[in-house]
Amino acid sequence: MVIVIKVGGSLLKLGPPENIVNDFIKTMQVDKLVLVHGGGYEVTEVAEKLGKKQRFVVSPEGIRSRYTDRETVEIYTMVMKGKINSEIVLALHSRGVKAVGISGFDGATLVAERKKRLVIVDERGRKVAIDGGYTGKILKANGELLNTLLEKNFVPIVAPIALGTEGEPLNVDGDRAAAAIAGCLKADKVIFLTDVGGVLIEGQLVKEMNVEEAKRSMRKVGFGMDKKIMAAIEAIENGVKESIISAGNIENPLTNSLSGENRTVIRP
Image 1 (cartoon, rainbow, N blue to C red):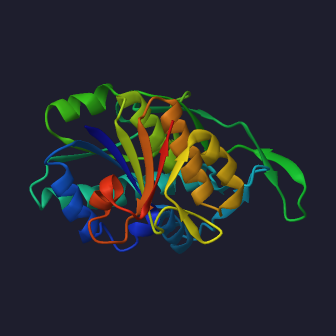
Image 2: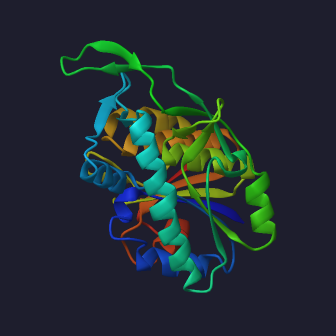
């Protein structure tokens, strides 16, 4: 099987977690894996140490995201590709894994269109339009480089920075980047590892949903999980057989994702 794994930034605050690295190595003995990572927490920390205060905005649909101006996208690229991606590659190489770190703009793996304008909800609850900055909407994912690496038994580690249509780097959501990559590879599964054990509605774990149920659930969950559900739906609509949202902060998180109880599985 081909499995795309998204590791959320909340799990990477102290570097690549040993529980994920260990289970990743076990899983790759059977399946071909691609890892997409987040890192927003560290981007914010580094940016503010450099004196660049970060701004977050909320869309009319309730989706919260980082506002990315030119200076922020430069910091974002530096931290995501230069630091976090390299740390994961080195952690896997130290265990004998042939990992290769790339970003979405390497090989035009992720191509996005720069958002010229963003509609957000301000502090008073009003809809206002602002300049789009360097945030991108993913137009397509290209599997050529990824497939070449997988065929040669390399493990791709992907930072979610897309190639803009004007040649610029763009900040794209990591979960949706993983969904796009899973779709272009026709992956069997995409797994979103996070710091909670699946989709919780009114305190109860939802173990299975179809796409329509998942769409209805988005208004019932908080910031962060709504984007994961959106990405999970996009993956299914792009041909992936299963999307799984599960805890990455437990022992054997991938094994649990594939066959355990503490997870939410979304299917067509």
